Length: 78
Image 1 (cartoon, one colour):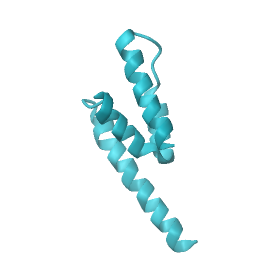
Image 2: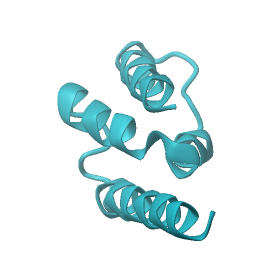
Image 3: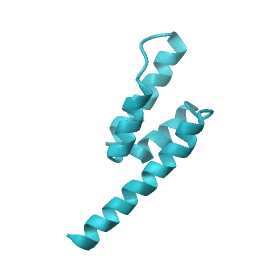
Image 4: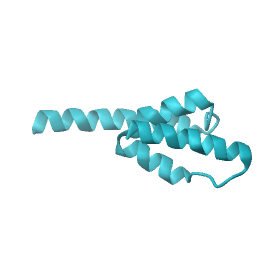
């Protein structure tokens, strides 16, 4: 999931530069929520994309933390 989110961030940056069809922000957040938060965060850093959007700067790390908590809880209770 991280690789997919990372690629989508790069694709969206490329589309933004050339004025093409963009990746919806909802899709980027959905991918991050489904376990691709680290890939999205790395994509933000690598391509300097969405770094001025507070929702991404704060949201991706929060989703990473939430995913970690879920994994820990699943490991404990399964």
